[in-house]
Image (cartoon, rainbow, N blue to C red):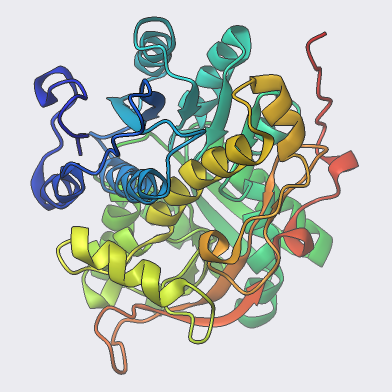
Length: 420
């Protein structure tokens, strides 16, 4: 997933492996415009291109590259072409911080995007805040990023963990039962997601039978599943993501856990459903964006454009996160005719995404008080056997607007401190 000609050679960047890398390289054709001799404007992106979240991270980068291509074809940012410089955080906080500093100090990027991993995203936000660089968190969900640890220069595209829980908890309680057991990834994202779901459960009058904390990169979930089976809940909520989600649901199916209790969760990803066998695709979930939206402006075009660079496969929410992050930065800079981080950060408060960027039926805008994008939740059920299109692995039953799932700004704990 490298950028063209005058951008630094691939050997100086992480080499992405497999089909995703090959697809992304199709976007590395010479799409940087010759913008009147202007110096290219650099956007840095830090994501975990290797490890448990490699598939979703690579798709975020692919979506960002498509947006770069489109922006450059329309004159770039303030007449300057964009270069996207990508670094691998490898799901490690220290590595992510190092890569962010490198992009800012050595590569002189104007903006930064990332990270999928919430812990890494929070650490990078400390760096961008220190350096006064406008930063969009594309895929890290933990509440505190736009909550108690919010920063004037940091905005977020993906949902918060509270938004995810609020979108689906009532449905799970009503349809599946009031006793829940959790399988939770043991880091920032998992902790806040489980906390939000438990708060909703308790408000509804339900109880938790247990919470199994699992390290990132777990391959064997048998011990956790044995404990969950012994607790005899109504619902087993599977909260890990990436390859951890795939491994967990595969073992749930192998052990026949679904015959004893309902299996479901909160956030689900198309990358995960694609990677697991049909019998593991079960339960109610929420998607943060879904590719099948008949009649919604711009979606069909976006699907077609991603197919061209994704080995014919449909886009996922992660493609949309990267795509939206780049388009947000370009749109606000061109609107304000400025690259000043503070001015742009102020202008993004209340900024609404255009139809061909939001790609969903509801209003999609950045809240001024916490810098969180009010983006929709696509709530429905995973399909073990799709009725028609084999790529349609999720049945969307309802699309809930972000300002219906997000806590009030006053309840987030965000207190923005602006530089003088």
